[in-house]
Length: 240
Image (tube, rainbow, N blue to C red):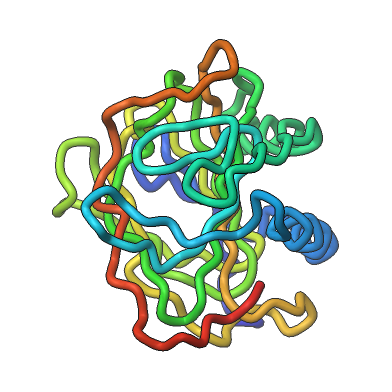
């Protein structure tokens, strides 16, 4: 993957959904990884997410700004250690605005949520919609580490039609407009494909969103589903 005859090009996967390869250069990838490692530390650090039906997400998660849990947001890690969620830094909003401008041509409302998911080689993400916010601002997704198959579908069903996109370290994916509520997931991670100089074993996905919330309490919205996949039976979980 290091050398290709034809460089990967910016691609519109669906109306309002754009893949921009190599958007983060190696230095910016390392800076973002360093920040993610700090955010993953307790309190309100990396955790395993469990759904009301007893399912378990195999990708572990840490949140900034607002804490997501199935299927709502709160200001504390209600399904973790109960401590206040870490703040959303202004430089992440700047990064999101640049991402949306580069992908879709114009900035949008201020971003205030980050969901950071860590995938080891066995982790997956079922088809779901990001529908727990009160804003239709585009979702910004940044990839670090191992390459994955990102399955991007449609707003109506978890099944076909969908498009499988290979997301590599440094890639940007933005979806808004007609595709804002499209189902999407990660059916496969290619273990051991992260750039060696990055120093990460596994995959990190940094997802930036606009909440549209007012006030400081918990916000519950019926929206997304089918995030969970059975957790690996092995007790040995790779650390970030």
